[in-house]
Image (spheres, protein in one colour):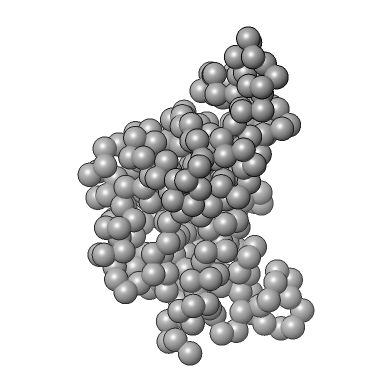
Length: 292
Ligand code: DGL
């Protein structure tokens, strides 16, 4: 048994968005302890420059490493896109997984016609990470990208639906799913059939986005696929918790994992918004304020 296998899995994001990945991971690996850091004091990352994002990401990851984790999950597309190779080099041999590759795989698998829209932050889009990651798994794909910075603010504010959110979404998605009027029948077939939420905050707005794109577009995100990547990697490295339960509510007496949350600012706000992301009431006692 690997002596590190009893350590928690560390996850981080600029804010609450990574909780969408946290939730998928907690569901998939209920016997593992999870340590989550939201760098809310420095949010958003998505409008910052690459060097700043790398610097912020390194210090957030360092905090988790100092506390003792067996794996780092970069539950932020922006941080993954800018800093994954740097993190891997800096913290080797600690395994570090990001969300871009899982997201690209999820989108490539969901699309029938290979036309994929990627919504993400400005930094993720400008760095080209998704365009490259999708091309690697599906070279025939045609990828359309759109930076939707305001979605992060809406999600952090807990504004998930309603006319205002839909209006903003409609504005951001303008033109992406419109068939040219002159060749409607043929063009409709060629419209994107899949929309990837390439920012971990965006799944919170899924209801509003569904209203805008209608019922026929697959909306995918990287959370569940990332959880599968984590399972594979922990298994390959013999790092799965030796006493873990097989599933949530496991009656065999195996352990259920514990979760801890860290934030760099404003515990009460983390609790309020975190409850929305996790779909359960969080208590202030679950969240610790840390300085990076
Ligand atoms: N949740 C982050 C992501 O997945 C971005 C949020 C931000 O801009 O800080 O890209």
